Image (cartoon, rainbow, N blue to C red; front, side, top):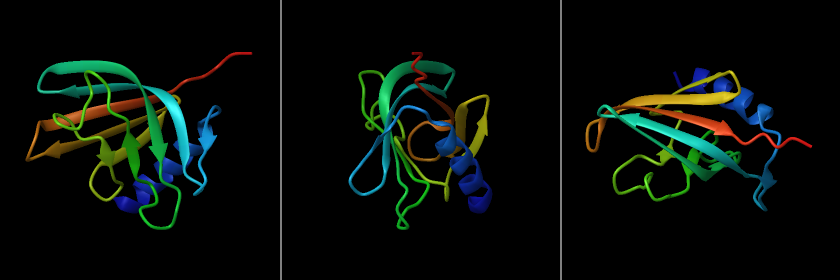
Length: 115
């Protein structure tokens, strides 16, 4: 599963057109986050960081917002534990959390700025 997740992560990373490359080589970009769990759906515009360094390659960190926060939801995502799928310009992530919220789905859609 992890190898397939890395392939999906790489396709997603390569599709992002507006990003800031951080000093350590990681990427930061604005995105719309849709988080679905327990029959609820929350949507918020937040920054997302992709870890591209050898240590933890493929890890995704979503910034905290008003509705999407680490107290209630998982914001650090790993190809070791979640399932990644890239399609239609977005990354779809799902998993089941024993400790917080049960089954959840996250959609990360990067901003596309038009000239």
